[in-house]
Structure formats: structure tokens, C-alpha cells
Length: 172
Image (cartoon, rainbow, N blue to C red):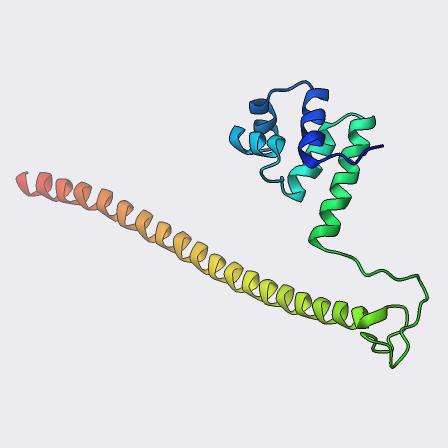
């Protein structure tokens, strides 16, 4: 089987699902010009759009080609290290830190990235908690303000009635 270019794969999938370039653009939240560029090979869609296109494509040869294109794009964007499970990085080898199971210290890198993400999540959770508290305070203030406005309106309604009663009693 010959290697398919992303442009040919996208065109085949579009023809398979029987939509126009404009229709595909609407389905993938892209422009018609972007779809034209993809099909001409001037640029490639991002991974999210390829995955969305995969969901639209019925099972068959086109979907398999699209799957291989997605894998190719994933490997280009975020290549995974080539290692066998249980492989031990030996000290002294280039790029090895002696980490068990993952050569080149990738495990350490993943732990660092995980730690960074955990800190970021903690910061975001704290921010959400502060914003929630601020929102609660604003809602309480709005409720209190509405009560005060009701009292003032009730006081204004009573005041004209009291003035009218005083005027009628003095006129008698």
C-alpha cells in the first residue's frame, strides 16, 4: 500500500462522507479556505480536527488511513521514547540516568511535569475558591441592597399617604 499524503487522505474521507469542502469546514469548525489548503497539501489540520474528522468517518479503508495519519501527526507533535517495558537504563550509557523502566530519565521528566501540573491545579483551585467567596459576598450585598430598596420604597409609599391624611385632618 502506498503512503498516502495527508491531503489525499482528507479528500478521500470528505468524499466518503459525501460533503463539500464548505460542509466539512462547518462540521470541523474551520473555514472553507482551510479545508482547501488541507486538500492541496499547503498545510495540515491540527490533531483535534483530525480526531473530529475520524468521528465523522464511517469504518473502512478511509478510516484506517485517517487513523495512520492521526498516529503520524501525534508522533510528530509529541514523540514517545522507544523503549521496551522493563528495560533498565544503565548508568554510563549516553542519555541514561539509571531510571528503572524508562531510559533517558523520562520518568523523572514525567514526575516533574506531573508536579508542575499539580501545582497549577492547586493554584487554579485556590483561585476558584477565592472567586466563589467573592461571588458569595457580592450576592449577599445584592440581597441586602434589594432589602434596603424595598424598605425605602415602602417608606415612600407610606409617606405620601401620611401627608395626605395630615392634609385632610387639618382641612377639617
